[in-house]
Image (cartoon, rainbow over all chains, first blue to last red; front, side, top):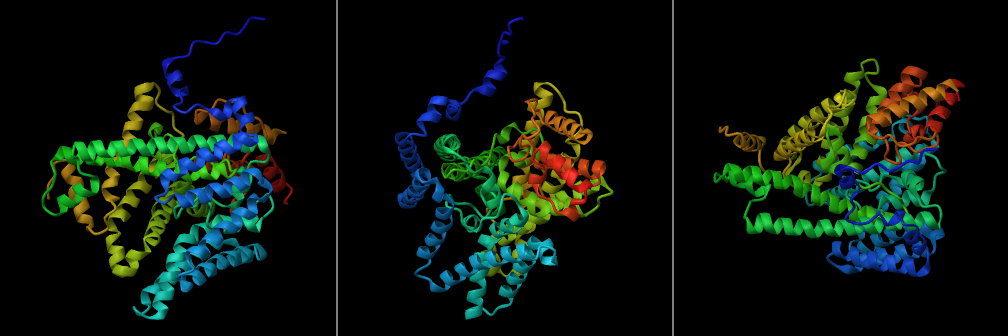
Length: 470
Length: 83
């Protein structure tokens, strides 16, 4: 037998293995200690303190920590606690507004009824395409609200409903696609995912009840490991939060570089900033978006993991992406999953089966163009209410162009994915990563927080970056 | 077991193309674990359509069905027996 010697590690290997926060979940002593009474108490105390970073008022953070503490010490009540507490919070928050409370509970009940119907009649037209029905009904609700006379009870009820359905629609959609999932269905878990304890954006973090059931810790050791991972992720979110604050103060305070939105506004108002500041603000905005999405996703997924669910991170090393599709996947994983689950797969499995490339491109457009546009247009329903439907669509033009370019880029990226990859550090990694970042930087010109400027202003700003003036 | 060997080989290729040369057991989770991505799931779908005549538009699609080599093989077998 020839003894095997470990080959010396290269610098790149050492860098790849370096962790700012040690991988505690791989240390047997840490996993053992996290299963003791004291270990659990210390982890929960650290988690509670860390969570306060992300809430202006520490009370909600403490409440979440308290509920997670119950789940940690009494995991057999995890599902029922998850199901009850968010609904109780909704009731307590809406007590001062009875109409909102009634409508809120009605939407939750509607979600439950739709889920039941999809299970009860799986072969019906609704049972076959429940999400398509949900989207169509929501569109009809928005159109009805637009047609209602302002300052009437019907107007108030309809727009309240639109707002509530907008916040619940993707959660209900996941419940509907869960109808045939295994392991067995669990109504408390379905209700729990309509408004998860750990919080969420309009995108369900992390997907629906079926996914939660699959990633749930099944014993004390698994719970200890997943909670250590949760704690680490929260620590990482805090570090990113502090770093992004320093970043903002340094670049936008000390160096006085305008934000991307400010630079666009100045361009629109006839006082454009110098060309190098435009580029600088654009590059900074790209990194700032990564910071904000990472921080949001990390603290939510950290809480989810502390509750005993080993969810994947929402953002994972986006700057290591070498293709546009990979960046989209690494940057905002659960939003990408939403688009894939509700738009990409249903299209891909049904249409253009005989034309492989067309099939892929068509399904990608269904997700990245139509799904993306529908998600954001309905998420910002207040703009439709305040401006009217036609003006809201007109204001949406820059984002439609954004979605078109994104869908085209992703289609090309996916079609090229299986080709031979360039090798070497520069051609294989540096150059593709730079290209990906450059693409998303430029694309962000059409995705600003402002929805007040027409498309031509965005195009003018874009052209000015390359010294083209019109 | 010819079908299973084919499936194993195909999944191995997908993992290698994604830069994953780690060990692969038949029961290992592929998608849920994050080893393969959505685009890889599409490749598996096309592979099953073309090689085993499975029509997901008819039988319904759930990523659990293709989350491991064992799961894929069970799906192929159930499609072959018409269940």
